[in-house]
Length: 112
Image (cartoon, rainbow, N blue to C red; front, side, top):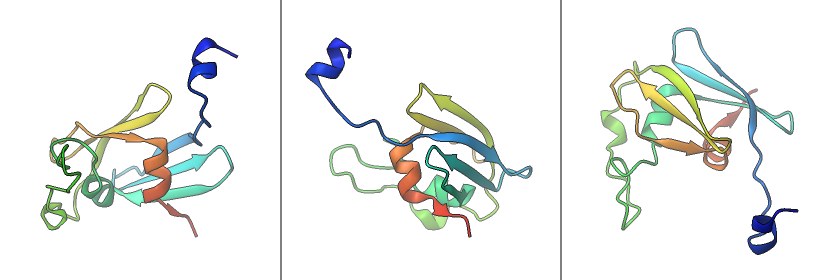
């Protein structure tokens, strides 16, 4: 056990073991450590962006109007952020959101 584990014990959140972007960039599929598979559309992920440009930092109120995100939106790039999150570049040029594993697990839907 490390020094940091002793002073701030916490349960490690589930993380995805695989992130697969649809060939056309319209959907992201995630496979989780517990075997659950979830997915979400690029449009929905953009609408849920947690960055300071989309959510007011003081009030936590969403400032991005979800109706302004087109259904034709695509994800052009998926990048890991350390071992705790993913970030996306969307076809509208937006790229500042960091999506922690917990948020992705909460907002993506189980594949049926």
